[in-house]
Image 1 (tube, helix red, strand yellow):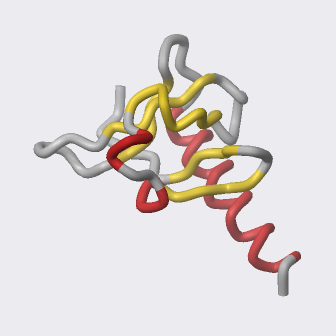
Image 2 (cartoon, helix red, strand yellow):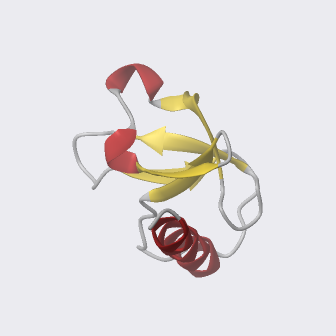
Length: 81
């Protein structure tokens, strides 16, 4: 497992950032999906590591998930003008 921390997730068909998550939405309550494999994500908002999303169970490639999230966010920015 790498030390890469993913700040990107999909919720309700839109890309979101970990900064968009409130304390009430931490863990599975964020209702987020992985931008690469559509697996369930949890929001990790602890006090030690940087806030990030992680797979709830089975994990796909972390680098691919990060890049898919970055691409998805950039695509939305370009499409929305």
